[in-house]
Image 1: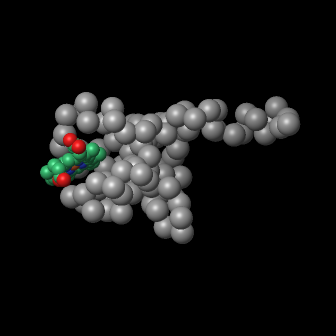
Image 2: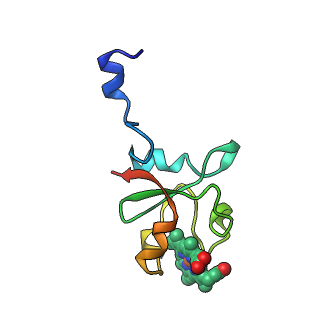
Amino acid sequence: MSDAATRCANKTHDEGHKVLTQAELRGYDGTDGAPEYIAIHGIVYDITNVNLLKGGKHHGVASGCDVSELFVHNQAILNRLKVVGKLV
Ligand code: HEM
């Protein structure tokens, strides 16, 4: 059981609602078994299990990065990806 201070310091409220900074996002680059996350327009997605996207194989889409400027598809394509939370 965590005390109030610990609970409030923990930015992970529940699954799908993490709040990540750019620096924290960088860590999710797939190295040393880390998950692979990307951010697009303020939303962070988990691409660890998306073969097309993971490992930097998809047109310069690099894990651990904000790739908003690379995004060329319709927004609807993002609805299929697992949301981790927000980028702040
Ligand atoms: C920036 C983030 C991007 C994300 C999240 C993304 C995501 C995706 C996804 C999920 C698909 C599969 C579509 C399907 O199954 O119908 C796809 C396909 C595709 N994407 Fe992207 N994409 C990104 C950037 C790009 C860029 C920069 C390019 C090219 C300049 C590109 C070119 C393509 C092409 C040509 C396909 C067709 C299938 C294939 O390449 O295997 N994408 N993308």
